[in-house]
Amino acid sequence: MPDWLALYYDRPVELTHGEGRHVWDADGNRYLDFFGGILTTMTAHALPEVTKAVSEQAGRLIHSSTLYLNRPMIELAERIAALSGIPEARVFFTTSGTEANDTALLLATAYRRSNQILAMRNSYHGRSFSTVSITGNRGWSPTSLSPLQTYYVHGAVRTRGPFAHLSDAEFTAACVADLEDVLGQARGQMAALIAEPVQGVGGFTSPPDGLYGAFREVLDRHGILWISDEVQTGWGRTGDNFWGWQAHAQNGPPDILTFAKGIGNGMSVGGVVARAEVMNCIDTNSISTFGGSPVTMAAGLANLTYLLEHDLQGNARRVGGLLLERLRAIAAAVPAVREVRGRGLMAGLELAKPGTDQADPDAATAVLEAAREGGLLVGKGGGYNTSVLRIAPPLSLTVAEAEEGAEILERALRSVV
Image 1 (cartoon, rainbow, N blue to C red):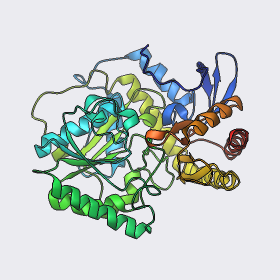
Image 2: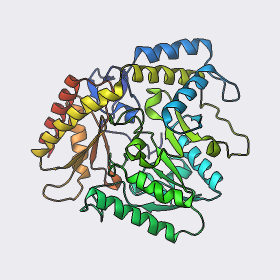
Image 3: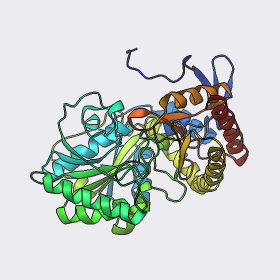
Image 4: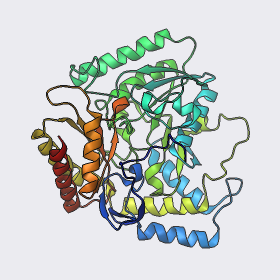
């Protein structure tokens, strides 16, 4: 394995199996999982409905590629198109969020005949050559070489930066003015703005509701497409909305929406939704060898059905709201916690050196380790300084499990900071 492969913990954990919201390691230790394989185990570990669908489909046909039709792919595409909110939607399946965003960039640049892209500061969109080039987070962008010309704009980080002191309305107005200024500096037409409604790797930061809708007014005047990167925010995780873009919907849906992670509940599923005019602009042949696989599509169908039938979006809103309240109460007594933010079952705790705004990545790493020792797995992120603990459990989390996780995290925080 390469030296640059990132691993959590001083003694990396080998996970062997899971059930519900818990996983076990090779030493028999049991953990409450508050990270879900980077927001990928969306409903539950070893969900019977999904494992049954995978097993039954594997017994019939494992692979065919998109050169052939398969019923699970068509059925899942129809359901996602209907849920997307995009009129005349078309769906193309990939194997990851990186590949989905790569495809979205291909569509936007081909449609607009431009390689100029607007992206948000502190963003993360994947690890391919094109997605690295629009990632505004230096910790995940190993090269400045790029097939795209990228312009970064303000707005995705509410409580840091030159506009942090403004009210929400003033913040939005300042960011719109910044967008206008950036567009004035670009030569020729811009292809698209790509934005995560809630930044994932960036530490679960988000703008005030309505900011991307305000951006949309500017984009529409210039004919610029809006790509909403829903790889981490989609499927009801934020509780209030099924898609993250819906918090910014005053001027309509995005032109392109990308998804991945949670829909497969651990299976490798990603994809792009776009209005037909944009999706169909490609005038060459294209396929996906593994995107739309019968097995992964069967998993996605079963998982989406479970999510909707059990109202896991509502559970994310209810249990997530209680968890956020509990975390804020803990933070009030721990000076090293600069901020608790998030919505639904997507929460971030930013750590800073007490009495300052200076990020403290060492403390975040120490708390990550202490939480593991206490039986809780959480994630980490937050710009280039990785000082944010990321909490994103499966959406079926119970109130008792939320309380248990909060207690373990509180002990970990107090033991370290």
